[in-house]
Image 1 (cartoon, rainbow, N blue to C red):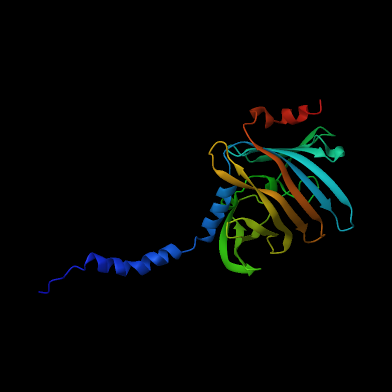
Image 2: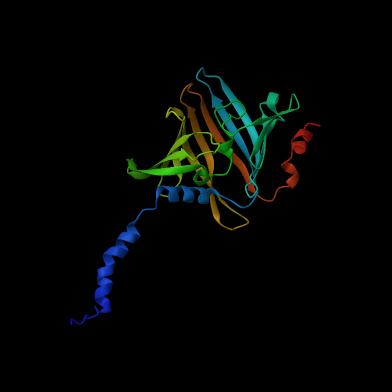
Length: 258
C-alpha cells in the first residue's frame, strides 16, 4: 500500500497563484456593470432640480423648455412642473408608484400616460429624468471593448425585460473606464435606431443620507434619428434634501395656478 505524502504549504501556494491571478483579472459581467452604473447614480435623499432644454428642429426652429423636477426614489414618486414655454406653464407630469399622469394646466385636465410617451412634445421621455434603473428594466450582453482616441470603452447591448415599460426596447451603451455612460443609442423593437445621446458632462454630488458620492448628468445631447431633431438638456440647480410629501399630489400641482 502506497503512502501519500502531503505537499508542503509553499508548494500549494505556488500551484494556486495562476488560479488566483485569473480570478483577479476576471471582468465583471454585463449585468453586473449595469448594476454598478445604477448604483453610482442612485440616491436615498429626495431630489429637486431644474431641467433646461434647447430644442432645434430640422427646419432650424428653436424652442426653449424649462421644468422643475422633484423625485422621491424611495417610493418611486416623481413630479415634473413645466415653467417654460409660457403657454404650457403650470402643466406637468406626476407619477405615484407606477401610475403616471400628464396635467394640462390650460384645460385643468389630467390624462394617464406612459413612460414611452414624449415629454412636452419633445423627443425626451420621462425616463430621461427619473432615477437610473437599467438593471431592473433590462438584461445586458457584453459587446466587448471599443478604443476611441486611445480610451477603451465597454459596449453593452440591453434588451427590455418582459412586461417592463421602457422608452426603448433596446439600448446600446458605451461606458468609460469609470463606468460613466458616454454614449447611448435607443432602438425600437424592430432594431431601428430611434435616438442617439451623447453625455457631454457629469456633476458630482454627495447624498446627505448615505454620505456617499453620486454622479448625475450635467449636459446631454440628444438627436432623433428620423426627423433629425436635436436637444441639449442641462440639469441645473440640483439639491438633495427632504421634500414635503404634499408635493406628490394632483392638488399640489393644480394649486400652483390658483
